[in-house]
Image 1: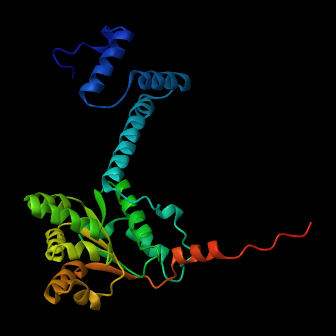
Image 2: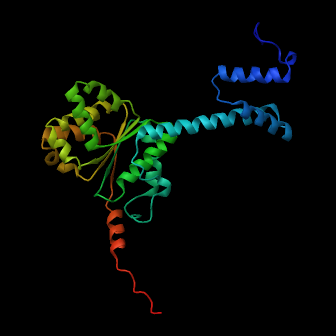
Image 3: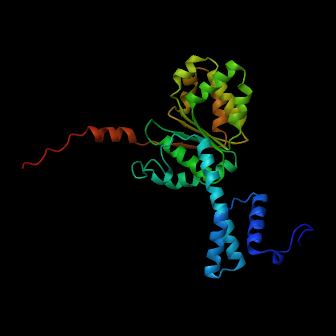
Amino acid sequence: MPSKTQKPAKTLTPARLREEILSALSALRVPVSPEQLDAALQAAESRGDSHLAFLWELLGTAAADRQERAIARRIREARFPNQGSLEDFDWSFNAAAIDRTQIEQLATGDWVERFENLVLLGQSGVGKSRLLEGIGRRLCVLGKRVRYTTSGDLITRLTASLADGTLPRQISYWTKFDLLIVDEFGLDYVERQLDPQAGHLLFKVIASRNGKSSTALGTNIEFDAWSEYLGDAPLAMALLDRVVDRAVLLNILGKSYRASRAKRSKAPRPPEPNT
């Protein structure tokens, strides 16, 4: 029922009622502009819509706009390298190595709900990064907070924070996302050589997320070679234990997209026909 300070709608003029509705929408933080309200009113009157249809015309558009802005914000926050989405992925090139049904299932985010991890293993160029970004973009649409980074960039940020005393803040930052994508694990040799603690710092991030949120790893390093790669057998075992625990493992034994494109670009052109 109306409050003591709220006037009954029938006592207000149409112009005043319009202003009161806009004020109420603003108080409720419903992003409906005067132009949107007027357009919804005109559409409802011309079609003879019911009260429910009018409300849907008014609020449904506002809700959809807000949802689109939220998705765009999550995608910006994820900092993807913009390699593409699953919709424009070339599924035919490595059809025998990449199961589209399995990837589409991963893109539903069920494994993220269970705090499981994902490891995409394969040589450079087989599409690991594009698949990881495509999955991440789908999860942004589903409302998940996602962050993409490379192993090298993550190590650089962690070593810098160790030097300036902000490591706990950095660890907290990387822990807050529903999904952390760490790509190019195996291509971070320079960053690891700059600081002997680099591997241990990376472990801190992975361990802090274990059992609380999901981590996706893209790598070209076979599991049995992690010890040699990291130069620290106990660290490699500990990192593997955190990453592989409750993880979906995909080993992509396919052809390189980049190598194929390079071959096509170098192919000799057919001779010009005689004129």
